[in-house]
Every structure is written in structure tokens, then in C-alpha cells.
Image (cartoon, rainbow, N blue to C red):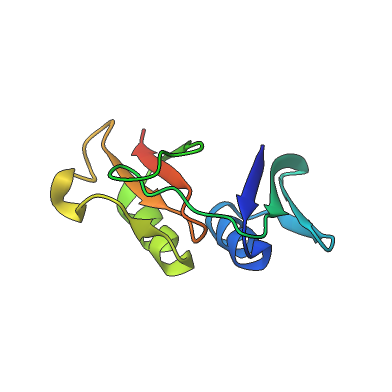
Length: 115
């Protein structure tokens, strides 16, 4: 999966903090691998305009991630630079199947869902 970003450094650092793994960088691409497997390529996209989901510009993609601890994953995501797209009190983080929706630093929506 390739993710466009005006500033690949910030976007790749965000996903690295959230998912772990390692990053290999070139001038225009940052390759994120987790457990030796490719996950994302963050691509420099000058003039990138982030989606304004759900009210404005449509999302270009969204990513769903599952976690055993939604409250802990929320803290990690926000500390790494995620922005909540819905209020925090819209879900009980301990309920099975609960989820929260965020945007990455480049504005790409993603969801953390409890298992």
C-alpha cells in the first residue's frame, strides 16, 4: 500500500510509532516493514491535500487495525500524532468490537478496533 504525504518524514514516523518495525528511506519514499514484511510505502506527494472526512473531501483510503487494548492503542496513536475524527466517548473501549476513528498526520483516516 502506498500512502501519499506532503511530508513523508512525519507520516512514516507516525506509522512507525503506531506499528513498530523498521523504516528504509529514499529521497521520495519511506518503506515501513514489520516483522520483515512490507506494510506501507509513504510517498512524497508535493501539494498533497488530505481528505476531510466525513464532512468534506472524500477519503482516499482507510486502514482498519485491530487491538487487544483499545484504550492503550488510543494513547499510542494520539501520542504519535493521530487526530480523533469522532468524540472519545462514542464507544466503550472495553466492549468487544468497539472502535475509534482517527486521521494520520497526513490526514488519512484509520480505525482502531478492539478484538
